[in-house]
Image 1 (cartoon, rainbow, N blue to C red):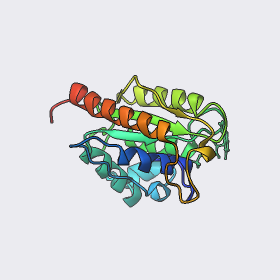
Image 2 (image 1 turned 90 degrees about the vertical axis):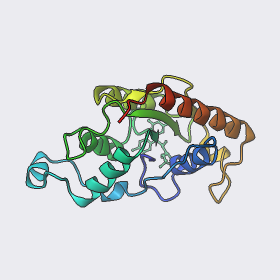
Image 3 (image 1 turned 120 degrees about the horizontal axis):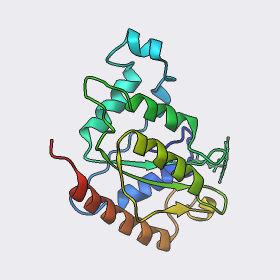
Length: 183
Ligand code: FNR
């Protein structure tokens, strides 16, 4: 999933570009309904133990996946609130269990500026570690100057980044194979 609600999000473009580089045997399903996840509220959780519909959809998608790939924007040197909110819901006990615990996760991100979401990814990793996710330590991928990497249709227009994404996705497949806990 991409941690942005913006229609022309660089991070959504990046996620689709990463999916296109998935190695043989790996299929990426893009979760594109973060806008339907309400603000986390323990009262809401108590009233609906299965979670509101938007949360159930997110949880079901994560629980069904062998791994979770997150493309994060950077807001004020941290992960955006919509993404943190989704992770807060996913961190909770549910009929599907705590779906981030022991789940293999990889993070990447794109920003318009020169740092490529370094601080957002650091804060995202911190949250994921707290949730017990198994976050791929390397390779890292910080996409700076995002406007120069994609064309007007949001298609990747940077062969070097395409090669990096291919290596990143191969590493993620290997990471899942290495750390996945048998069901
Ligand atoms: C930003 N942006 C930004 N960029 C960055 O490199 N470091 C930062 O700390 C911030 N902070 C920040 C705060 C807020 C509230 C906004 C709205 C934006 C710019 C940000 O990287 C840019 O808007 C990206 O395009 C957001 O990602 P998507 O939506 O394109 O995926």
